[in-house]
Length: 94
Image 1: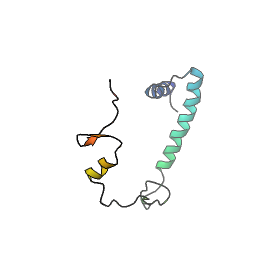
Image 2 (image 1 turned 180 degrees about the vertical axis):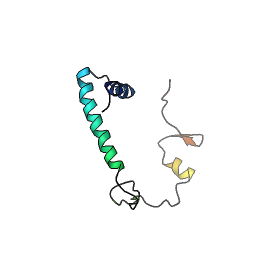
Image 3 (image 1 turned 120 degrees about the vertical axis):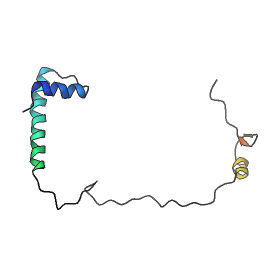
Image 4 (image 1 turned 90 degrees about the vertical axis):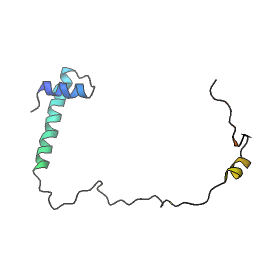
């Protein structure tokens, strides 16, 4: 079982301020979690392939392909305002 000092230390690492009553609750809860992890460590998983997700997911993004885009002249033609071959925008810094 975790000691109260260990629970206080874990709480301080997590930046959580616990009252004495809460420390006792977390002492039992964290101990139960660690006990369960010990049970899981005993399982033989040598024949199981590692996974990053429980479901077989596939990438849903499209393949990156280069394609023609607007030229500088075309882009500036549709700009609301331009100056010296660049987009002109309202001043945002005083």
